[in-house]
Length: 86
Image (cartoon, rainbow, N blue to C red; front, side, top):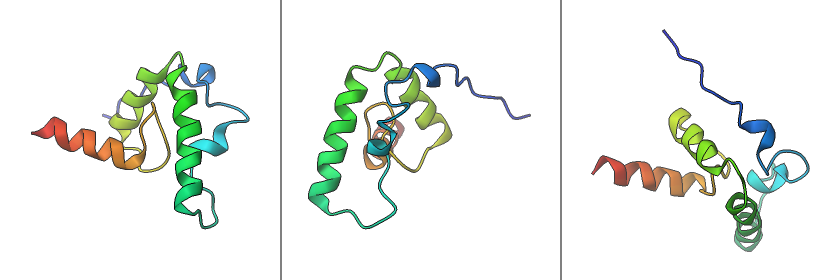
């Protein structure tokens, strides 16, 4: 049996709406400096988000492979998951 995950936090997330483009890479090539600037801006939004913990928990639970969730990039989430296994 598959359990449905609670997503009731999503409508109040600070990233919803016009800022969403900051949280995912563009469909075109992105230079390293551009990516870093985008990620800094997205993480600043995450720091003030009222549901950051729920967001990160969700991304870790579903193993979200893309974007910034709960203030962490894809790589940072993988690293956190690896550390938790040790």
